[in-house]
Image 1 (tube, rainbow, N blue to C red):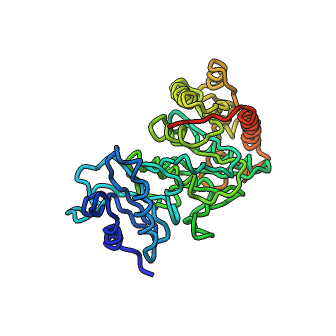
Image 2 (image 1 turned 90 degrees about the horizontal axis):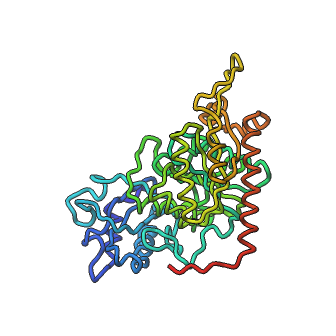
Image 3 (image 1 turned 120 degrees about the vertical axis):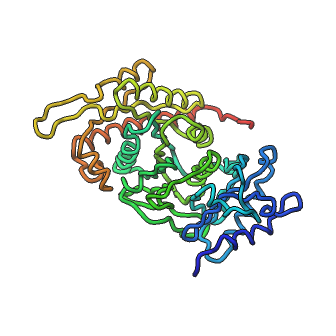
Length: 394
C-alpha cells in the first residue's frame, strides 16, 4: 500500500471546522510530518480557547487515522504560531520549509485520552494507573552519564524480579535504543494503542524508535511536552512495578512539565564529582522539591578511574563531591560508579554491563543502588497510602 500523501491529509482536514471555516483554510495546520505511515502535525490555536478545543483535536486525529495506510496519527494543540505559519492553501510546503517534525506513534486516538491543551493530561484519565511507581533519573546538565545510569538501574530492578519499563524522555537526543540494543518501530497488538519494544526483560519506548539516527527533531516546547505525555499514557505498558524515566538534562520547561504532570514517585539525581556539575545537580534537585517530588538521593558517576594496566586509581573529576553535597542537602548518597571502559563499551554495544557482566564489580554497584532506590520507592508508596487523599483543583 502506498504511503499517504500530504495532500490527502490536508483534504481530510478540510472537513474539520472551527468557527464555521475549516482548519486548513485558516492556516491552523502546521508541521505535517509523514514517516512510514506515522503522521504528526500541530494545530495552532488561540491560547485562550485551548482548553475548549480538545474535541477538535480528537476529531482531526481520528480523520487522519482513518485514512488508508495510516498506522498512527499524532496531533497536538499549540498556542505558539510560527512566523509564516504553514498549512492549508499556503505558498509554503506545509511544515517542511520551517520545521521537520517527527511525531510519536500514538496509535488510534493518539493524545486523545483525557488530554487537555498541548496534550496535557486531563483530570478524567489517570496516567499509568497500572504502574506501581515512576522513577525519574535526572541531572542538571548533560554529559554526566545519566542515560547509562538509567539503563543499568532499570536492568538491575528487572534482575531483581521487578516488572520494569524504561522511557527515554530525552526527545532531542534519544540514546536509549542504542544502549539497550533495540531498534525498529512499535507495533499495535490490539489496534488501539502501541506496544513498547522489549529487550533484556525491560519494556522500552523512545523517540529514537521513530526517527532516523541522523534526523534532527525540531520542535517547540508544547509539542515536546505533548509527545512525552503521549509516550507515557498512550502506550500499552501493561502492569509495571517501575517505569524508569531517563529525563532530559537541565531544568527547563520540559523537565518542569514532566515533574508537574507525571505522577512521579521520586527522582534520582546523577552528577559527577566536580563543583560545576554539582551546582547544576543542585538546581535539578531544587526543581523536584518545588513541585513536591521526593528526591531519593544522589549518585556520583565517573567517581574515579582505575587504570587497567597498573591498577592505579586516579580521581580525574575529583571524588566525593556528590556525597558531601548529599550530606549538606539532607538527602541520601546512593553510591558511586567509576569511570571505566567496560561501562562505556557495553553501553555503546547495546549490552549494558548489568546484563552482560552481572557479576562484575560495576554491575554490583548498580544493583546496590537499585536496591536502595527500591527501598525508597516502597517507603514513598507506604507514606502516600497512609495519608489522606489530596484534592487538586486546577
